[in-house]
Length: 264
Ligand code: GLU
Image 1: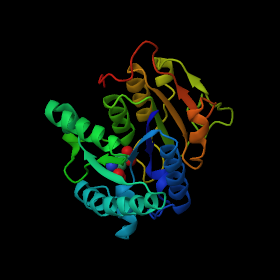
Image 2: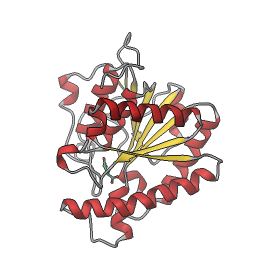
Image 3: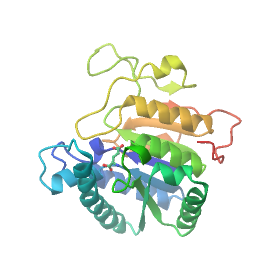
């Protein structure tokens, strides 16, 4: 299977912005094993700004764009250094790919991206993708990595997109506020009723929330690709997800739509 796994800042970093070693090591181990089992794995990783905040000892997530970008430039190095080192323990080679929405909208650039991606996968490398925060200001920003993950999954014809977050999945209500909230295991179609279940934004250093995840679900399922939201604290659940077992919330790709289309 061709799998895109998106991991959010809330999984990768503590609230201090420092690396969550337990989470990252667990994730790298499982992704390496999935590659060893013959799957193609693409990682869309946030965390650059969060880690830059930690590395630069900033008091919290910066409000202004230049400081965010500076934090991302510092944190992206830390992020890739960490992935490079950890994946090397399992004999896997990572490749950094930094994108903006302009790269996706521009036919030539998009083709270049797809060609590079195809070659990297043939060569057995593990692409690690993030937004190019140094150049991506408001107008050319994808904005959040849930959407970036969906764009990547569609453009490379992935079979599955997994969003690792700090929440178990989609609930009938906000579980942080409503004790009666129930997890929804399967969503057959992203209807307006489902879209209305999106609450506000996620935790401290993170960018997305349920709204961006549901938008991502709408994009990939329309292209025939399944999407799962699950808690990034338990990366070993990826094994169950690949076996089709009930984990988090699974959004079913529309039947009859080949996932190899570039329809996002
Ligand atoms: N590109 C940003 C980063 O790596 C985050 C975007 C997001 O969290 O969705 O920090």
